[in-house]
Amino acid sequence: MIYTVTLNPAVDVYFTISKPLQEIEVNRADSQTLKAAGKGINCSLLLDTLSIPSTAVALLGGFSGAFIKAQLQEKKLINVVEIAMKAENRINMKLLQKYTSLSVNASGSPIDETVKKELFACTEMLTADDIVLLSGSLIPGFTEADYIELCRSIKAKQAFLAVDTEMLSLSLLKKIQPDLIKPNLYELSLLLKRDSLSESLYDGLQEVLKYTRSVLLSLGADGAVFCNHEITLRITQQPIQAKNTVGCGDALLAGFIGEYAKTNSLFAALAMGAACACAHAEGNDTALDLIKSYLPKITITLIESLTDLQL
Ligand SMILES: Nc1ncnc2c1ncn2[C@@H]1O[C@H](COP(=O)(O)OP(=O)(O)OP(=O)(O)O)[C@@H](O)[C@H]1O
Ligand SMILES: [Mg+2]
Image (tube, rainbow, N blue to C red; front, side, top):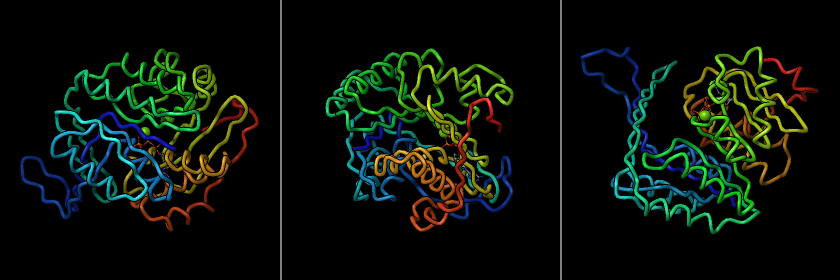
Protein backbone atom coordinates (compact mmCIF):
# COMPACT_ATOMS: atom_id res chain seq x y z
CA MET A 1 0.00 0.00 0.00
CA ILE A 2 1.10 3.55 -0.68
CA TYR A 3 0.57 5.84 2.31
CA THR A 4 0.66 9.61 1.94
CA VAL A 5 1.16 11.60 5.12
CA THR A 6 0.06 15.24 5.22
CA LEU A 7 0.88 16.93 8.50
CA ASN A 8 -0.55 20.30 7.53
CA PRO A 9 -3.40 19.81 5.04
CA ALA A 10 -5.15 22.83 3.60
CA VAL A 11 -8.12 24.02 1.64
CA ASP A 12 -6.71 25.82 -1.39
CA VAL A 13 -8.96 28.56 -2.68
CA TYR A 14 -8.23 29.26 -6.35
CA PHE A 15 -9.32 32.54 -7.91
CA THR A 16 -8.95 32.96 -11.66
CA ILE A 17 -8.44 36.61 -12.49
CA SER A 18 -8.24 37.94 -16.05
CA LYS A 19 -7.68 41.63 -15.33
CA PRO A 20 -4.38 43.00 -13.97
CA LEU A 21 -4.30 43.03 -10.17
CA GLN A 22 -4.94 46.37 -8.54
CA GLU A 23 -3.87 47.52 -5.12
CA ILE A 24 -6.46 49.04 -2.75
CA GLU A 25 -9.32 48.50 -5.24
CA VAL A 26 -11.33 45.29 -5.03
CA ASN A 27 -10.19 42.68 -7.57
CA ARG A 28 -12.97 40.54 -9.04
CA ALA A 29 -12.40 36.86 -9.74
CA ASP A 30 -13.83 35.28 -12.90
CA SER A 31 -14.16 31.97 -11.11
CA GLN A 32 -13.46 30.37 -7.75
CA THR A 33 -12.68 26.75 -6.86
CA LEU A 34 -12.02 25.05 -3.52
CA LYS A 35 -9.63 22.13 -3.41
CA ALA A 36 -8.41 19.80 -0.68
CA ALA A 37 -4.65 20.21 -0.67
CA GLY A 38 -1.38 19.66 1.07
CA LYS A 39 1.44 17.83 -0.66
CA GLY A 40 0.57 14.30 0.51
CA ILE A 41 -3.10 14.82 -0.32
CA ASN A 42 -2.13 16.06 -3.80
CA CYS A 43 -0.20 12.81 -4.27
CA SER A 44 -3.19 10.67 -3.16
CA LEU A 45 -5.48 12.55 -5.57
CA LEU A 46 -3.09 11.95 -8.44
CA LEU A 47 -2.71 8.26 -7.55
CA ASP A 48 -6.51 7.99 -7.65
CA THR A 49 -6.46 9.42 -11.20
CA LEU A 50 -3.96 6.69 -12.10
CA SER A 51 -6.31 4.07 -10.53
CA ILE A 52 -3.76 3.32 -7.83
CA PRO A 53 -5.12 2.94 -4.27
CA SER A 54 -3.55 4.91 -1.46
CA THR A 55 -4.17 5.63 2.20
CA ALA A 56 -4.12 9.34 3.00
CA VAL A 57 -3.10 9.96 6.60
CA ALA A 58 -4.04 13.55 7.39
CA LEU A 59 -4.40 15.79 10.44
CA LEU A 60 -7.92 17.20 10.10
CA GLY A 61 -10.05 19.60 12.13
CA GLY A 62 -12.88 22.15 11.99
CA PHE A 63 -14.99 23.06 8.96
CA SER A 64 -11.98 23.07 6.63
CA GLY A 65 -10.94 19.62 7.87
CA ALA A 66 -14.48 18.33 7.23
CA PHE A 67 -14.30 19.73 3.68
CA ILE A 68 -10.95 18.04 3.02
CA LYS A 69 -12.22 14.71 4.38
CA ALA A 70 -15.39 14.89 2.28
CA GLN A 71 -13.41 15.63 -0.90
CA LEU A 72 -11.06 12.72 -0.28
CA GLN A 73 -13.88 10.33 0.58
CA GLU A 74 -15.47 11.04 -2.82
CA LYS A 75 -12.50 9.28 -4.40
CA LYS A 76 -12.96 5.53 -4.75
CA LEU A 77 -9.31 4.62 -4.28
CA ILE A 78 -8.40 6.88 -1.37
CA ASN A 79 -8.75 5.47 2.11
CA VAL A 80 -8.70 8.37 4.57
CA VAL A 81 -7.07 7.91 7.97
CA GLU A 82 -8.12 10.98 9.89
CA ILE A 83 -6.06 12.18 12.82
CA ALA A 84 -8.53 14.49 14.51
CA MET A 85 -7.31 17.82 15.82
CA LYS A 86 -9.18 20.61 17.59
CA ALA A 87 -8.02 23.49 15.40
CA GLU A 88 -9.24 23.88 11.86
CA ASN A 89 -7.06 23.24 8.84
CA ARG A 90 -5.46 26.21 7.17
CA ILE A 91 -6.82 27.97 4.11
CA ASN A 92 -4.43 29.00 1.32
CA MET A 93 -5.09 31.51 -1.39
CA LYS A 94 -4.02 30.98 -4.99
CA LEU A 95 -4.50 33.64 -7.64
CA LEU A 96 -4.28 32.31 -11.17
CA GLN A 97 -3.72 34.69 -14.07
CA LYS A 98 -3.07 33.75 -17.68
CA TYR A 99 0.70 33.31 -17.45
CA THR A 100 1.43 33.71 -13.78
CA SER A 101 0.18 32.73 -10.35
CA LEU A 102 0.44 34.05 -6.83
CA SER A 103 0.22 31.92 -3.71
CA VAL A 104 -0.34 32.91 -0.10
CA ASN A 105 -0.09 29.94 2.27
CA ALA A 106 -1.13 30.04 5.94
CA SER A 107 1.00 28.34 8.61
CA GLY A 108 -1.70 26.31 10.36
CA SER A 109 -2.64 26.11 14.04
CA PRO A 110 -0.57 24.32 16.71
CA ILE A 111 -1.33 20.70 17.57
CA ASP A 112 -1.03 19.01 20.96
CA GLU A 113 0.54 15.79 22.29
CA THR A 114 -2.64 13.70 21.79
CA VAL A 115 -2.58 14.38 18.05
CA LYS A 116 1.11 13.48 17.87
CA LYS A 117 0.54 10.21 19.74
CA GLU A 118 -2.27 9.23 17.39
CA LEU A 119 -0.05 9.98 14.40
CA PHE A 120 2.85 7.91 15.73
CA ALA A 121 0.44 5.05 16.48
CA CYS A 122 -0.44 4.99 12.75
CA THR A 123 3.04 3.79 11.87
CA GLU A 124 2.23 0.52 13.68
CA MET A 125 0.19 -0.62 10.67
CA LEU A 126 3.15 -0.33 8.26
CA THR A 127 4.99 -3.31 6.77
CA ALA A 128 8.09 -3.74 4.61
CA ASP A 129 5.82 -3.84 1.51
CA ASP A 130 4.54 -0.32 2.10
CA ILE A 131 5.66 2.99 0.64
CA VAL A 132 5.27 6.19 2.64
CA LEU A 133 5.25 9.62 1.00
CA LEU A 134 5.94 12.16 3.71
CA SER A 135 5.33 15.49 2.05
CA GLY A 136 4.91 19.13 2.92
CA SER A 137 5.52 21.54 5.73
CA LEU A 138 5.34 20.78 9.44
CA ILE A 139 2.30 21.88 11.39
CA PRO A 140 3.10 24.21 14.33
CA GLY A 141 3.68 22.15 17.50
CA PHE A 142 5.28 19.34 15.50
CA THR A 143 8.99 19.83 15.95
CA GLU A 144 11.96 18.64 13.96
CA ALA A 145 12.58 16.08 16.72
CA ASP A 146 9.01 14.78 16.22
CA TYR A 147 9.67 14.59 12.48
CA ILE A 148 12.81 12.55 13.08
CA GLU A 149 10.91 10.22 15.41
CA LEU A 150 8.15 9.79 12.80
CA CYS A 151 10.68 8.98 10.05
CA ARG A 152 12.49 6.54 12.31
CA SER A 153 9.31 4.70 13.23
CA ILE A 154 8.41 4.42 9.54
CA LYS A 155 11.87 3.04 8.81
CA ALA A 156 11.73 0.68 11.80
CA LYS A 157 8.87 -1.04 9.94
CA GLN A 158 11.16 -1.25 6.88
CA ALA A 159 8.68 0.66 4.75
CA PHE A 160 10.09 2.69 1.79
CA LEU A 161 10.28 6.34 2.87
CA ALA A 162 10.08 9.18 0.32
CA VAL A 163 10.40 12.71 1.66
CA ASP A 164 9.42 15.97 -0.04
CA THR A 165 9.71 18.99 2.18
CA GLU A 166 11.29 22.45 1.98
CA MET A 167 12.77 22.16 5.44
CA LEU A 168 15.39 19.49 4.69
CA SER A 169 18.91 20.22 5.86
CA LEU A 170 21.94 17.99 5.58
CA SER A 171 21.91 17.33 9.32
CA LEU A 172 18.21 16.38 9.22
CA LEU A 173 18.83 14.13 6.23
CA LYS A 174 21.63 12.42 8.14
CA LYS A 175 19.20 11.63 10.96
CA ILE A 176 16.32 10.35 8.84
CA GLN A 177 18.20 8.62 5.96
CA PRO A 178 15.19 8.27 3.63
CA ASP A 179 14.99 6.07 0.53
CA LEU A 180 14.14 9.00 -1.76
CA ILE A 181 14.04 12.79 -1.60
CA LYS A 182 12.38 15.05 -4.19
CA PRO A 183 13.82 18.53 -3.93
CA ASN A 184 13.61 21.16 -6.65
CA LEU A 185 16.84 22.98 -7.50
CA TYR A 186 16.18 25.79 -5.03
CA GLU A 187 15.43 23.33 -2.20
CA LEU A 188 18.59 21.36 -3.00
CA SER A 189 20.67 24.54 -2.81
CA LEU A 190 19.03 25.41 0.56
CA LEU A 191 19.70 21.88 1.79
CA LEU A 192 23.36 22.19 0.85
CA LYS A 193 23.58 25.82 1.96
CA ARG A 194 24.94 26.87 -1.45
CA ASP A 195 23.89 29.96 -3.38
CA SER A 196 24.02 28.24 -6.74
CA LEU A 197 24.46 24.67 -7.91
CA SER A 198 25.14 25.38 -11.58
CA GLU A 199 28.87 24.68 -11.13
CA SER A 200 28.63 22.09 -8.38
CA LEU A 201 25.58 19.91 -9.01
CA TYR A 202 27.75 16.80 -9.19
CA ASP A 203 29.31 17.44 -5.76
CA GLY A 204 25.95 18.42 -4.31
CA LEU A 205 24.25 15.21 -5.42
CA GLN A 206 27.22 13.14 -4.18
CA GLU A 207 26.89 14.83 -0.81
CA VAL A 208 23.18 14.09 -0.40
CA LEU A 209 23.58 10.52 -1.68
CA LYS A 210 25.56 9.81 1.49
CA TYR A 211 22.31 10.11 3.43
CA THR A 212 19.51 9.16 1.04
CA ARG A 213 19.35 6.12 -1.24
CA SER A 214 18.07 8.14 -4.20
CA VAL A 215 17.25 11.64 -5.37
CA LEU A 216 14.57 12.83 -7.79
CA LEU A 217 15.63 16.40 -8.48
CA SER A 218 12.98 18.41 -10.29
CA LEU A 219 13.98 21.27 -12.54
CA GLY A 220 10.65 22.82 -13.53
CA ALA A 221 10.40 23.30 -17.31
CA ASP A 222 13.89 21.76 -17.66
CA GLY A 223 12.66 18.36 -16.49
CA ALA A 224 14.33 16.31 -13.76
CA VAL A 225 17.32 14.22 -12.76
CA PHE A 226 17.08 10.87 -10.98
CA CYS A 227 20.15 9.43 -9.32
CA ASN A 228 21.14 6.72 -6.88
CA HIS A 229 24.47 4.99 -6.28
CA GLU A 230 24.14 2.92 -9.48
CA ILE A 231 22.52 5.13 -12.09
CA THR A 232 21.94 8.73 -13.15
CA LEU A 233 19.09 9.57 -15.51
CA ARG A 234 18.12 12.86 -17.11
CA ILE A 235 14.41 13.30 -17.79
CA THR A 236 13.35 15.96 -20.29
CA GLN A 237 10.22 17.08 -22.08
CA GLN A 238 9.14 20.00 -24.21
CA PRO A 239 8.61 23.05 -21.98
CA ILE A 240 4.94 23.88 -21.55
CA GLN A 241 3.46 27.34 -21.15
CA ALA A 242 2.48 26.34 -17.61
CA LYS A 243 -0.96 27.26 -16.30
CA ASN A 244 -0.22 25.93 -12.83
CA THR A 245 3.27 25.27 -11.52
CA VAL A 246 2.13 24.84 -7.92
CA GLY A 247 2.06 21.12 -7.20
CA CYS A 248 3.99 19.98 -10.32
CA GLY A 249 6.52 18.35 -8.00
CA ASP A 250 3.77 16.43 -6.19
CA ALA A 251 2.48 15.14 -9.53
CA LEU A 252 6.01 14.08 -10.51
CA LEU A 253 6.56 12.24 -7.22
CA ALA A 254 3.13 10.58 -7.14
CA GLY A 255 3.32 9.43 -10.77
CA PHE A 256 6.82 8.11 -10.22
CA ILE A 257 6.03 6.20 -7.02
CA GLY A 258 2.67 4.90 -8.29
CA GLU A 259 4.14 3.49 -11.52
CA TYR A 260 7.21 2.11 -9.74
CA ALA A 261 5.00 0.29 -7.22
CA LYS A 262 3.02 -1.17 -10.14
CA THR A 263 5.78 -2.12 -12.60
CA ASN A 264 9.08 -2.03 -10.70
CA SER A 265 10.52 -0.28 -13.76
CA LEU A 266 12.58 2.84 -13.07
CA PHE A 267 12.24 4.09 -16.67
CA ALA A 268 8.47 3.58 -16.80
CA ALA A 269 8.12 5.24 -13.40
CA LEU A 270 10.14 8.31 -14.39
CA ALA A 271 8.22 8.68 -17.65
CA MET A 272 4.90 8.42 -15.80
CA GLY A 273 6.03 10.92 -13.16
CA ALA A 274 7.08 13.42 -15.82
CA ALA A 275 3.87 12.88 -17.83
CA CYS A 276 1.76 13.52 -14.71
CA ALA A 277 3.81 16.65 -13.98
CA CYS A 278 3.30 17.92 -17.55
CA ALA A 279 -0.45 17.34 -17.35
CA HIS A 280 -0.46 19.20 -14.04
CA ALA A 281 1.54 22.09 -15.51
CA GLU A 282 -0.95 22.25 -18.37
CA GLY A 283 -3.68 22.63 -15.78
CA ASN A 284 -5.33 19.21 -15.60
CA ASP A 285 -3.76 16.22 -13.92
CA THR A 286 -7.15 14.60 -13.37
CA ALA A 287 -7.39 13.69 -17.05
CA LEU A 288 -5.81 10.27 -17.55
CA ASP A 289 -5.92 10.70 -21.35
CA LEU A 290 -3.91 13.91 -21.12
CA ILE A 291 -1.34 12.22 -18.86
CA LYS A 292 -1.04 9.31 -21.32
CA SER A 293 -0.67 11.70 -24.25
CA TYR A 294 2.49 13.08 -22.64
CA LEU A 295 4.14 9.67 -22.13
CA PRO A 296 5.66 9.38 -25.65
CA LYS A 297 6.98 12.94 -25.38
CA ILE A 298 9.19 12.24 -22.36
CA THR A 299 12.87 11.53 -23.03
CA ILE A 300 15.03 9.66 -20.53
CA THR A 301 18.79 9.60 -21.08
CA LEU A 302 21.36 7.63 -19.21
CA ILE A 303 24.15 9.82 -17.87
CA GLU A 304 27.33 7.76 -17.75
CA SER A 305 28.76 9.61 -14.82
CA LEU A 306 27.50 12.31 -12.49
CA THR A 307 30.45 14.40 -13.71
CA ASP A 308 28.79 14.53 -17.18
CA LEU A 309 25.67 16.02 -15.69
CA GLN A 310 24.89 19.45 -17.04
CA LEU A 311 21.81 21.56 -16.59
N1 LIG B 1 6.78 24.69 -17.62
C1 LIG B 1 6.89 23.37 -17.57
N2 LIG B 1 6.93 22.65 -18.70
C2 LIG B 1 7.06 21.31 -18.68
N3 LIG B 1 7.13 20.59 -17.56
C3 LIG B 1 7.10 21.23 -16.39
C4 LIG B 1 6.98 22.66 -16.31
N4 LIG B 1 7.00 23.01 -15.02
C5 LIG B 1 7.11 21.87 -14.31
N5 LIG B 1 7.18 20.80 -15.12
C6 LIG B 1 7.28 19.37 -14.72
O1 LIG B 1 6.98 19.30 -13.34
C7 LIG B 1 8.06 18.72 -12.62
C8 LIG B 1 8.17 19.32 -11.24
O2 LIG B 1 8.28 20.73 -11.36
P1 LIG B 1 9.01 21.67 -10.29
O3 LIG B 1 10.47 21.44 -10.32
O4 LIG B 1 8.51 23.03 -10.57
O5 LIG B 1 8.41 21.07 -8.92
P2 LIG B 1 8.31 21.73 -7.46
O6 LIG B 1 9.04 23.03 -7.44
O7 LIG B 1 8.68 20.70 -6.49
O8 LIG B 1 6.74 22.00 -7.37
P3 LIG B 1 5.76 21.88 -6.08
O9 LIG B 1 6.61 21.81 -4.85
O10 LIG B 1 4.90 23.11 -6.15
O11 LIG B 1 4.95 20.64 -6.28
C9 LIG B 1 9.29 18.96 -13.49
O12 LIG B 1 10.28 17.99 -13.21
C10 LIG B 1 8.69 18.81 -14.88
O13 LIG B 1 8.56 17.45 -15.21
MG1 LIG C 1 8.15 20.72 -4.46
